[in-house]
Amino acid sequence: MQRLNNQTLATAAQVASTPSYDRASARAGIVHLGIGAFHRAHQAWYTEALLNKGATDWQIIGASLRSPTVKNQLAAQDGLYTIVERGADGEKFQVMGAVKEVLVGPESPAALLSVMADAQIKIVSLTVTEKGYCHDPASGNLNLNNPDIQHDLVNPETPKSAIGYIVAALDARRRAGIDSFTVLSCDNLPNNGEVLEKVVLQYAEKASAELAVWIRANTTFPCTMIDRIVPATTDADRQELEGKLGLRDEGMVLAEPFSQWVIEDKFCSARPAWEDAGALLVDDVHAYEIMKLRLLNGSHSLLAYCGYLAGFDYVSEVMREPVLAKLCQTFMDREVSQTLSVPTGFDMEHYKVELRERFANPGLKHRTWQIAMDGSQKIPQRWLQTLQAQLDGEGNIDLLCLALAAWIRYVSGVDEKGDVIDVQDPLAADLKALCDASNTPEETVRAVLNMQEVFGAALGGNAQVLAATTEWLTRINEQGVLAAVKAELA
Ligand code: CS2
Image (cartoon, rainbow, N blue to C red; front, side, top):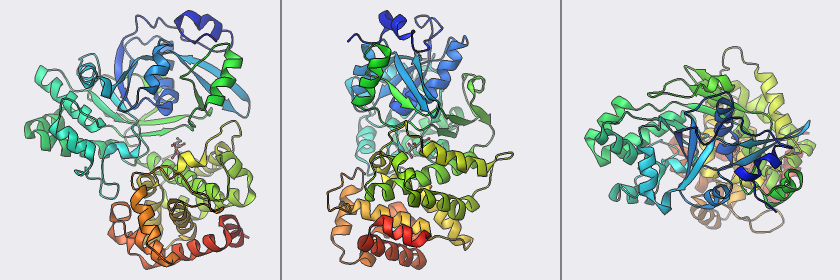
C-alpha cells in the first residue's frame, strides 16, 4: 500500500480535506517539544487553520525528546498526516500540512538547539506530559534529584529534558543578541506557564545568574487551557483508515470533534492569530484551567481507575455502565462544581452534560489504562486541590476518597480478578513497595497518603481523608468497585 505523502496527496483529497497552501514556501515559526498525538490533533490543528487562511510564517518544527517513532512515521510522508475526527455524526478526515519536519533530540541535540535558537522561531511550545516538567508536583519546585536535570546541568550542550533544551536555546539566543521566543506550555497542569517559568528559572539560576536575569527580563510563559480527547492511535486505527483513504498513514491521529484552547495573551514575540482559528486569547486563563482539570480530567481519572478495576477497557464502555455514569455525574455535581469559580458568561451545567457526552463517544477507543498512567503526577491538580477546597468549605469528600482508594488499589498492582496491572508511573515502584509492606487497608492508605511529594503535609495527615479512603479501600477489596459504588449511590 502506498504511503500518504506529497506525491499521493491527490488520492487522499478524494476523501479528506488537504492543505490549501503552498507548504514548500511556508516558513516555520514554532518549535514544538513533544510531538505526540495530542499536539498533532490540537495546536497543530489550530495552526493549520491559519495556514489554510493564508498565514505563511507559522509552520511547526516538531521535536521528540525521546524516541524516533514520530519522525520515522512522518519523514516518509513529507510531514503529512491525517486527523480522523470521530463523533456522533460520523467521521471527517483532514490531511494536515502544518508540521514541516520532525527532529529527534537524542539523535542530535545540537541540531534541535540550533533550530530553537534561530531568529525565525518565535514560539517554543510543549506537550511533554506532567512528568516532563521535572518538578515536585506538591511544591512546584524543580526536582534537582531528577536524573535528566542532573545530566543537563552538567552537560548543557546535550540536554535530555525539555527544561534543559529551553534554557540552552535561550542562552544561545542571548549570546547571539537574538530576541527571546515565547515559551508556551500546553500540558494539563494548573498555571502551566507559571509552573514552567518557575522550573526554567530555578534551572537557569543553577546554570548562570546572568542568564536567569536575562530570561526574567525577556521571556514570557503564557498559561493555556488545552482540551481535546485524543486516544493513542492503534494499528487497527491505521488499518481502518487505510481502507478509507486508499493510502497508508503511519502518523494518523484520531480525535473527537470538540476542541478548546484558551491562551493567556502574554507573548514576548510575534504570535499566530490563533483567535482566527477559534482559540480564545484572554487575560486570565486560570478559571478555565481549574474548571477543565477538576471536571474533565478529575472525572476522567476517577472513571479510569474505577473502570479499569471493574474490567472496562474503554471510557465509553465505562459510561455505558449506569452505576459508573451516575458516579461521574454525582462526582461532578456534588464534589467538584462547588469548588469552581466559573469564567464570566460560562454555562457550567451545560459543560458538565457535554463532558459526559464526550466521554461516552463510542467512536473513541480511549483506554482506561492510558488515562490511569502517571497518576502520581496527575492527581494533585485533578483531585487533591478539589479535596482541599471541599475540606476547607466543609463540603462532601466521599467520592474524592473513593477515587483515591481506587487509585491506591490500582497502583498496588493487582486487579479484581487477581491479574497483574501494568502500572506506568514514575513512582510505581515506590507505590507498590508501600502497598506490599502494608497488612491492612488502613496501613496501606496511611503509607500512601504519607508520600509528601504527592500529597503535601496537610492533606496526607488529614484524619477525615484517611478514614474515608480506608473505608472505601476496604469495601473495594471486599466487594469489588462496582458493587461498592452501587451500594453507595443506590
Ligand atoms: C486524559 C487527558 O490521559 C489523560 O489523563 O485525562 O489526556 C484528556 O483526554 C485531555 O486532557 C482532554 O483534553
